[in-house]
Length: 231
Image (cartoon, rainbow, N blue to C red; front, side, top):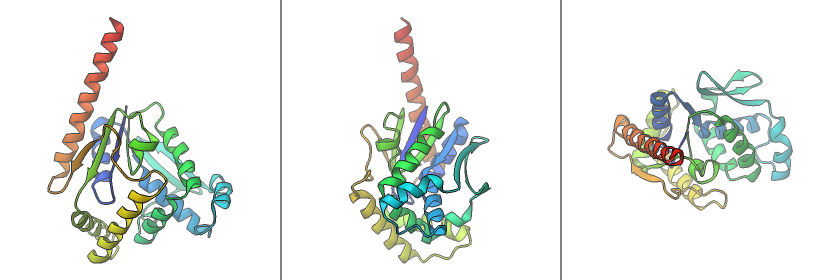
């Protein structure tokens, strides 16, 4: 089964996807981390501002690996796992920029689909249910007010030991929302059939339960279909 969770920055995608994956014993696929890792790698190689033709040639040769170990996505650079270095505000901005480049999206699309083969996956991002996994059994679009999302993101940065100004983060989120919604490649929007959940004012357990209820409903539908075919 594939559970695809989309939504803007700070809507709770990562927290909810991780929680649901743990409850189901599945793999949590953090597509945002994959984009940040590519942005970080391109920055290291001084390739962030290159054109699509250069990116097309360079991306496959980057010493980046995306693997699943112990039901978790691990991103490796020259064999060593990446961590907080891809979670800075600068890398987040760079990831937003490269996410609008076709070679980067194609490069990560093949890895995302490969990682989801033959396992239960909870994938979160901005186009998981519209582009990467359009046939996902469960599609969810999480949202929240820009102010609430900025507050969450600032708290996240502070937990990581990174200073962040609320007003700066809020304006950056609004700019990211506009860019994501209006880009020509995989614009951010709820997929057909997706359940939209406003997480403002809801706790993590409450939102996770909404998703779990959708998963149980999908399982029941699958069981009924299998029963009908057997008859």
